Image 1 (cartoon, one colour):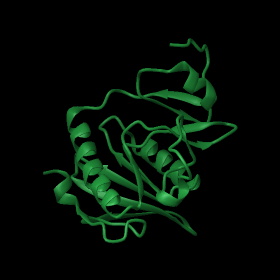
Image 2 (cartoon, rainbow, N blue to C red):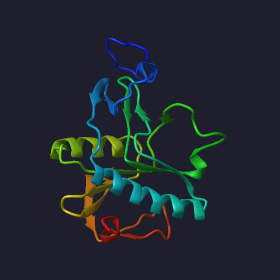
Image 3 (spheres, helix red, strand yellow):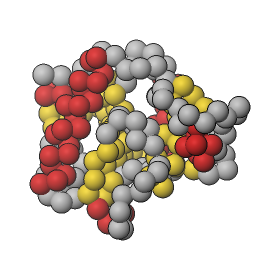
Image 4 (cartoon, helix red, strand yellow):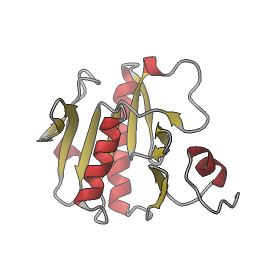
Length: 180
């Protein structure tokens, strides 16, 4: 592992090869705790359902937890959603070998007890203001899901009984199924 005294860019983060979950937010390295078991199970559950649908319909690519998306430069931001979807037409040739350049079309965030409301809001806004079309927030404590989009007035959040998306025509996941 390369030792870097200060990590402020995506390139430094890549070279440092940090073995703990982290994100780079506007040039600031933020370490994240390991996820608890319920978080991982919900993440895998959503990933499996989404990946199966996307593959069956040849819509694009689903990326698993901790995949880095380089969403901004100068200052650099590399965020890692719990699940991400990128439309097929956005990837020409091979899947990038380093961080994905840009935001996913859909970012799924499974909330943790350690997440504050301001952290969730900040990350959702970072995704949406940097090209992500939708953010799904899944709350294991409340057993709810919300779909966040950007409209002319700012971030719109709608709590739903079924996760669906214009990006994934025909996909429907009842929220109750996420927690079963």
